[in-house]
Image (cartoon, rainbow over all chains, first blue to last red; front, top):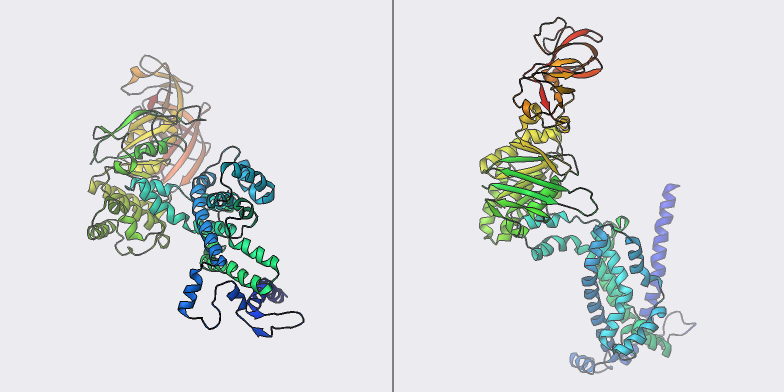
Length: 287
Length: 351
């Protein structure tokens, strides 16, 4: 009985994974097919047409190294959006961690009045729908001149990101013993070396997870970029939406693949820090 | 190789009604091993933290070789602390842990390697350099922590409860190791503990602290034989207390006249308290004593190996007496006995 239950559990996990992966398989078929319509079970012919239209792959006949370089030199929209998304993601990730570190240290190590309230306020952007605050922010950003600027978009991305980063790092600091720092100080390490040699290795797994959250939340931001960017800052999610509404499934699928690929890549390299056994996620219960 | 002077040290914490450290002065000679002894929360760890520079005193001064260290940052004081839970850096192996302070000084890696090997041999763990702290036992971790502290040639070595995390059989071994290394290197050393046994076993002198106030700073023996007050006596296992009224050349008590050869009788108040260690009380069926003898009754007899403990009651006063089990007289429960409090062993103090 128990054995059977175990088997059912395992199969249900496989089924869940399959359901999650299925649409991605459909993306791949769509992206490399030509006019794949109902009731065809598989596409009649494979084609690179979508990629050619996105100006990522040159037309047939000029698919040489030179051809690729010439095409990319024209600075296609997809590449521009990709670079924008990556740059915003990296900037926002680094800035959010720098801001969150001191706050997380205090929240993780000390108990004080209204701590629960402060944590609640910090988490509130994850409960509040973005549309509720972004319209108000937009008015302020316009009057401050941040609207339509790279700076403005980075700033507004910090709003949904900070809760994840602060909470993840707080969990790390809840498991952290600051006496290690005092020990290093009495052994002759100055403040900088203490942070670099003692604190940083201890919180590194948590920082990786926090960075992962920060980057992925920024990466998938549509509404905030759309409103604050005022159409001047084109990122991948904006491109996905506009392409999807144009109604070309192959094109949409191709862009979607470009959109999800970096996320999967990052997840792949950081997954060991997110698992239950790692110290990065085990401190939450102590906050 | 340092003389340490703690002068009128005061530290207040917000939310505490009394100072955590209340006007404490201690002088430590070069190469001495000192214990700060007191119950938890008495301020002893606060003193250590002020010496290392993790806390700043509100008043007073800390001098190493007559130079104040209060304005010197922690990392330049060369005062090394060994924490109770050892705190070996988990991301470094034993060699890297022990060599940490030399690396911070910027020494040549070859010199560091040589010194690390020397230190590990000194703590009798020469072959574990490549291991990680997690792979070591508690006793080994403490030795590595000790080696890591000593390699820096500290002017003052601080130990936080050095024996309390160890098993009974390891305590003796560790005690010997600490005292032998400390004497060999001549390093001035100070440790805090709440365990009077640990303090007595290790220290040359003990500073007893209650509620942030220094009670007494003296050699361990004195705390047993000449405690400064009742709470100090109780902390060192004192159980026998007799309330006295001072007279010209004797003392009155509820059990009768008590005489003593104590020298400092002039300093005693009119109401004072006598104490005597259980091992110093004598009992006998026949009256063979000249003075300070009282008739009492045995309430209970507890055999505890080398010693046998008797609870005696004299006129509602309870006393505890401990005799060597070997060659003991035949004294049983409910027996009437003569109890002698030898006048050279009784100690009288102000409360």
